[in-house]
Length: 272
Ligand code: SIN
Image (cartoon, rainbow, N blue to C red; front, side, top):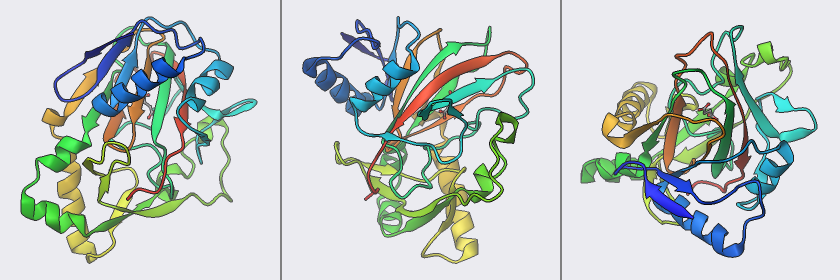
């Protein structure tokens, strides 16, 4: 297996492993180390992985998370089908920077997405390094944010979002949770900013005006281009990103062309 940095700030390209085959303990260790070091891995030269194999693959990294809102694949509730095409009115739900399902009490550790159909051009995904977002703050700001928690909600975001994909959720209540604004990665022990525009609605300890101001500042800060990469997909690439220390955004610039794939998400722990 070969791991090559994608850019100095985050990401690595992995070749020399076939993800549709069983993974040895040595390979798994190697992947986990690279994942913790580079935060997002792009596995190239893959074939299309079946839903069963993608579930098996995800389970090497932990129990799988079931998405609270997104359309599930028939018989495979662990699989979130990503599909946008000429009739889509919204993107696949990732059109701005976010960490997947941060509104859950135990948000997903990581996400594995393989794309099988790509637009002829466009449809890139952007990733941003939230260790860098934290590290570049002043010491005083780090101390201030270190004591604060934020409310992450999803009712406003998920309600009716997938109605074009036959998701009927009139009577459904979507999750919300309170998480520290600065979280410590359970493996690397590094600190990362943990807020995002989709789900983070309020700083718990501040009044509404202060909360708005701080969150707006943090959203802008987290989106600085210096912390980002932009990934151009090839058919059947598998991306595996760490939701605890990155944000991502799928660029919705290819309508009416088609983009299709499947993702599994691995359960995480309470952010601390
Ligand atoms: C996602 O958030 O899973 C979607 C990312 C993408 O479509 O590139």
